[in-house]
Length: 308
Image (cartoon, rainbow, N blue to C red; front, side, top):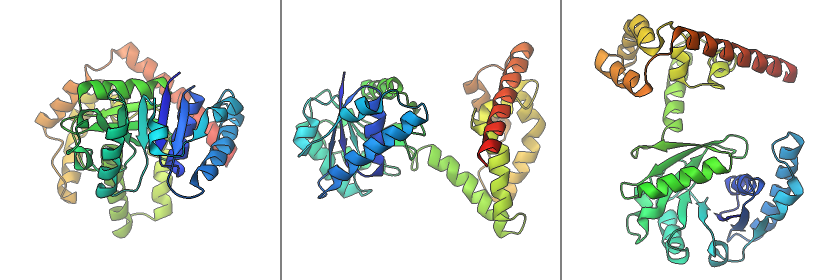
């Protein structure tokens, strides 16, 4: 078994503690706020029971027993293979905290931050061990939503990225690698694009907020719960992404121009995406994937109806 240090015992810190504990890791939880650790340990115990009731944790009691409170940062980091920091969203606070963690942690320990917006380079540039620092941005709550965005600074080593990715895969999360630093990482930028257009459509009188939400929850959201936007459009045209772009690029170009957004639908940029995605599926594979998609959507629709 490996040990993880969870620095900061708020909602995200507790969720991370549950994620690592149910995967068999020893968890050392620390927080300087008075009473925070007692609240966190009880919250983890209750949360693990809820996970077990829904088939998402094999043994809640055993997992809870693997989580303990550490009286100091040094105690929490002692022997830890991975550190997950969940402190305040301020550059200066994170810089000071990472400097202390870099001093205390073993040289091979990965130092990861759960920050939702601050780029890794903004709080690690002065560290001797800056090569082993990385952002591991979860989606709240990480014990239920598995994606983790891994974003290093220019000096974060490839070995650190690979180790962090392997760690999160091993504990049942779904890591993605942000290949170079960008504000907001990937998920928040996608969410911003959708929200910006949602606000525009409502503000200009095209749709009500409730009907727009219905468009997502009973439309795009159903497909996106099983696949991303590229696979979605691959299955929406017989010839995959190149075929889809050939059919609909003029429409998307007009929309992008009207919205004043960047031009992304010209042939050169479409080719970059299609080349990166890979060749379109063979007809039989396309049909099989479409059948799989429809089956999963049917199951999800039935589930959503049963919960309404």
